[in-house]
Image (tube, rainbow, N blue to C red; front, side):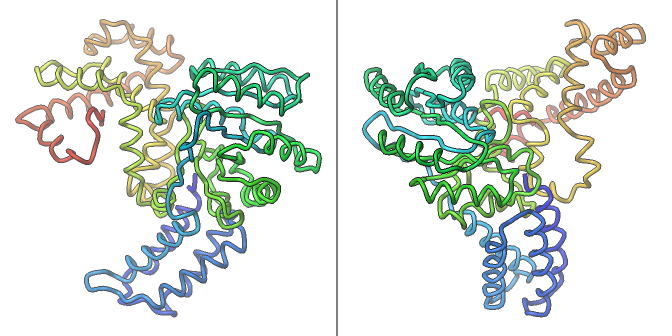
Amino acid sequence: MFNNLSDRLTATLRNIRGQGRISEDNIKETLREVRMALLEADVALPVVREFITRVKEKALGYEVIKDISASQAFIKIVNDELVHVMGEANEALNLNVQPPAVILMAGLQGAGKTTTVAKLAKYLKESQKKSVMVVSADVYRPAAIDQLQTLAKEVDVAFFPSDSTQKPEKIAKAAIKEAKRQFIDVLLLDTAGRLHIDDEMMQEIKTLHKSVNPVETLFVVDSMTGQDAANTAKAFNDALPLTGVVLTKTDGDARGGAALSVRYITGKPIKFIGIGEKVTALQPFHPERIASRILGMGDVLSLVEEAEQKLDQKETEKLAKKLKKGKPFDLEDFLMQIQQMNKMGGISSLMDKLPGMGQIPQNVKEQVNGKEMSRLEAIIQSMTRQERRRPDIIKGSRKRRIATGSGTQIQDVNKLLKQFTQMQKMMKKMNQKGGMSKLMKQFKGAMPKGMPF
C-alpha cells in the first residue's frame, strides 16, 4: 500500500534539500509535485486542495530551528498534515458496554465483508481477550452464511446459525439472546451487501440497525476503488450512524487514495485495515504510523507489535541456546527463520515497515519477494533430515533430486546453499566473542525478545 505515493513523495521532498530556509519560492515546485502525487494516488480533489493549503500555510509560517534544515522542517509539516487528514490517532472499538457488544458490519458486495468479520473476530479473541460470536443476516446469499460458518470454525469463535428463509431482524435478535445466554462479550453481525447502493438496500439495513442498536457500525470498503471508496462510505454514513471504516485489500492498493480521503469526506475514523487474505491479516489503523510509511520512514512500532504477537518464542529461544553452545546453524534453522518471516506477512511486508526502504531500487525490491522465499522453503522441504543438518553432503546427485522434488533448477539449489553458507558465517561471527550478546544489547528495549533477524 502507498508504494506509488511513497516513491513520488520521497523523490519530490528530496528537491527541497540544501535550502537554508523555507520560502514561497523554494517550496512552490515541491508543492506542485506533492499535489500531483496525491492526485495520481486517487486522493479526492477536496482533500488534496485542503492538504496543500494547510501545508503551504504552515510551511511559510514555520520558524526553522537551529540545527534543523529546511527540508527536515518541511517533511515534518507534510508528515503532520498526513496524520491530520487520516485522523490523528487510532480510534479503538467501543466495547465498554454491557455484553454482548453488538458490532454491525455494512458494505457493498465484494468488499470482503464476511472475511473481515472473521478477521475482526480473531483480532478481538486474541488481542483483546474477548469471547466472540458471529452471525450472518445475509439472507440473499446462502453461500455467505456457509462461508462465515467455515471461517468461524477456522478462527475458533462461536457461530450462530441462520438461513435464507428468516428475516434479518429476527436473526439478529435471536443471536443477541443466545450471546447473552452464553455470556459472550462481542457479537459480530454480518449483513447483506449489494453490487451498488440502492434505496431498498439502505432501508433494509436501517431497519436492521434500529432493531439491534449496535454499539459499533463499521463500513467495510475496498481500498482499491480509491476515492470512490470515500464517496460510497459517505453515502452509507448519510443513511446509517457509522462509527468507523474498515479498509480492505490494502495490500493490493499501491495508491492509497482511499486511506487519505475517507476520514475527510465522511468524518468517520478508519479503525482497521485488511492487508491480505489470511484471517490474521487485519491491523488497527494508526494514522501516524501510516504517514511515516508514506514518507519512507518505516513503521517500526507495528513491526515490533507483529513480532510479539506472531513469532514463536520457544523456537527462537531454542535457536539462541543452540548457537550459544557452539552448535552449527543448519538448514533446519534456516527453514525456521523463513517460516517465522512468513508469519509476519513475508519479506515484502517487513520491508514495507523498515525505515529507508524507499531508497532501495524497485528492481532490487522485486528480487526479494514472497515467491523467492516460497522457493527457498520448497527446496529445503525437499531435503532429507540428514541433508538439512549436514549441508556439506549435498553434492551432484542429491542436488538433482532436491531440484526435481521442489520443482526448481540445480542453479536454484546452488543459490540457496550459497545464501545459507553466508548466513551460517554471519551467525558464527555474531556468536564469537560475545557478538550475539552485544548485538542483542543494542536492540534491547527496541525489539521484542525472540526476534529472528
